[in-house]
Length: 277
Image 1 (tube, rainbow, N blue to C red):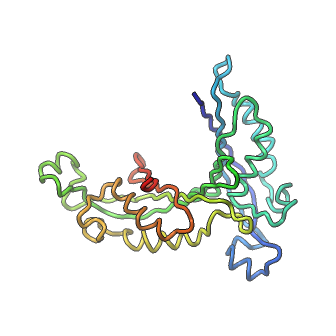
Image 2 (cartoon, rainbow, N blue to C red):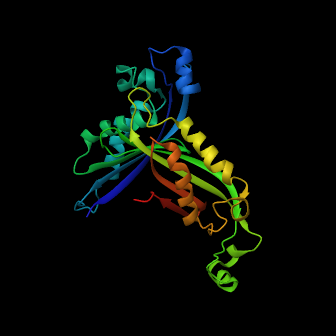
Image 3 (cartoon, helix red, strand yellow):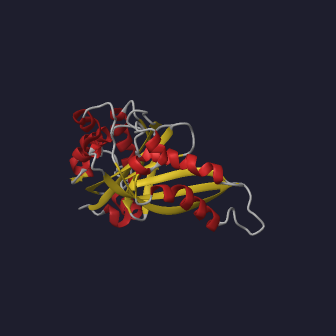
């Protein structure tokens, strides 16, 4: 039986993205404003998960103080209030290595692994901002990147397979004939190997364009039952909605691999879908 322990730390750092052999214009075309040599920065949030199949006689997988000390010494001290390109040894040594969330997550993994005893590093999850994060499980260059989006829509839960009385009994106030609405939160997780040139799994601008065209233009500020063809005959539950979203998003991301969609209807519930696998 495996036990998992996750610790959360924060650090503040600056960076920029830039390929030395490219011109200013070419770098801007590739990275946009993040190529500005004057830099930008983030309040990074780092989640470190370790695992093990046994607990010590003291009942702990690892002493939290020991884990915190390792993270602070070998990660936080190297990044906090630093300029990553100019002050972190790994990125100084290789100026072509972009300090993206993907590459930083891999570097954090490499920094922590030698110092962990009696436990294994399971996951490094780095948030660059609340809507963008990278997950690394130590498997070659495979990274999972998640971008978060939000849109507003109304709907009515009503199944054509049920009578009006049955619909009221099953869906309650969500069966209100006039509908109700939500601020939907959609997490899009893609996966892939990090591009050695850009340091990224995929072009985030491409992902943004796909979501804008395929999701927002269809569903944002719409009544799902009345304004969309997708739900003319389909009950717009979140289970059905997240599957519909997958079917309209996934083909337009290729060759980027869509790993998971997570749809949050309210803060109390969310629905994950991994495709027809």
